[in-house]
Length: 297
Image (tube, rainbow, N blue to C red; front, side, top):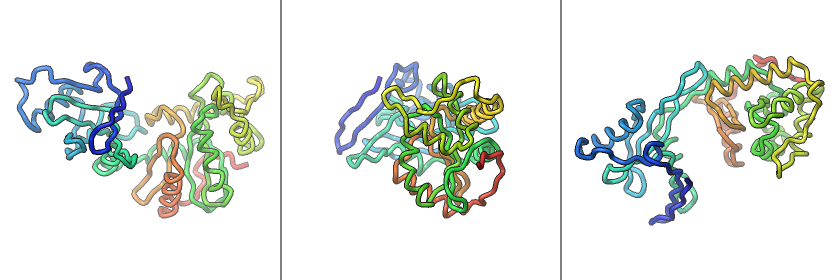
């Protein structure tokens, strides 16, 4: 259940709430057995996450809440980085709120800002290397800042990403290395493989995005199934595997180098995000090598 509460101090609290057993809103089962104060909160948090959550940092949150940066349990793969999140306890240490975004009067997500401030830096180097050794095609000039972008041809947010990056690519300020996957709809794999197999994948992608059906969320590119080379399907499935092993379950996903390592943007970036990412890559000055079996046609 999604709840939007307008609270004091101009803050908006947006949360997804489920029963205590679901872990989004948790109550103390036996308050008498838990010590008061911080120890009580930590005990409550660990109990509700079955002792598998690791508390990284405690901080004073808005609305008199206490915030905790935690590392969440997840199946481990060689590509999957640690998963960090922010949860809150109320002033009485009787409730745990997870999956909560707290927005101030200026629309800033205080939960996300706290995560960025207090959580350890997540290094996506292993995923970046896997993408660089995977199959992608380049759009844009050589010698300019570049990013890897996992996309699904039927993804409406990937369509918006393509539209928002036209100026950056056209003006020679950004190169995009498009990594096609087929994860959203039944024909996503065929579309992705067809784009890869095209004589000009960049032009095929342009058809997909220019003719995108926003009502039905369908990419505009199509190719008969029997015309798609099996090798292209195999390459798309290998890209799918990279996403799964990295713990990415939606598109778009952007991977890019910074001075601190490799970072990722999950989901559609804003124009401000794109400029920040471009400048981060420019500052890092990554070597424009060809590690991959890229389709540089």
